[in-house]
Image (cartoon, rainbow, N blue to C red):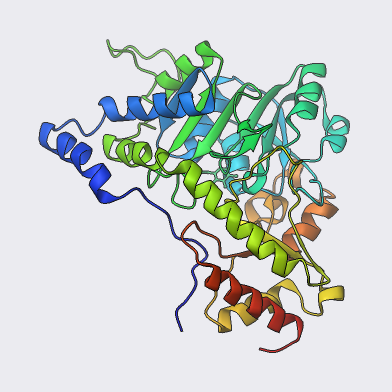
Length: 373
Ligand SMILES: Cc1ncc(COP(=O)(O)O)c(C=O)c1O
């Protein structure tokens, strides 16, 4: 029996990359050359933003963006996210204040933010979870009212739509991840997107140690440069972005018909009917009392049938060893985050998945509900 992986990157064909790879290998310009610039321009045009700065990871994109915004004091963010969101703040010596999520969209709950704002709060960080757009209008309202910076961790959302257009240009800055689980991948990499030209310029400097052409350093930077080899892969990946997101959405529609028939199983709800999600991950939430088996049991049944699953994001940030010792995160009441993170199961989803593979996963979930191992 073949194993169904949790995901498989859908990459551009080698033939489309080969001429560009040959060129840089033969001319020796394997970093600081033209392809990273072309990739940045291509993404900026796709997103409709003025600036796009490519760096070596999504984590560094976030760390640099926060640093170049010169944030101070506290930043408010969800605990239901990948550790990198919080790490970027800690590397910038910021205090992390965690807020609960909406039980249906799994995104930051705007109704809970204002009571966490203190005189020390400098920014809100929102995550478009699994590619599902946050309520960007509400978040902008709150950030404007309290004069806070608004940062979008859009690690999952390159390819998502909001009001039928690419989800971009919101807040002060957005960052994207280009690791292999993302629709657009450069193997490893990240992007900083912003309409603030001065901020983009500082981020550009910061990715290269903060040094100018004369080697004078004017700000605290690091080495976060993207190589030409990574830039070429990213550029090629942009050719298939929309086809990949569309394929995933068709598969989710097919999954939905079968899975929603089971009492006790529900899917992440999208913000509204104008949005498109990348479905970076496809999650089901299992109510064990109704379904008859809990998330961990279902994962075991699927594993025994050769189906890989993940538990994104479990444990959430406030339950992780490092963050449990940090006072701002310690013992916070985040009941929805706790419920969602202990009851969601990530099922396989990737653009080249077949309907027969989706059927196999759904049959395994049904067997779990009937307690058939
Ligand atoms: C929500 C979120 N933020 C940030 C990152 C960091 O991105 P990278 O792995 O490219 O450093 C990730 C990675 O997947 C993520 O899921």
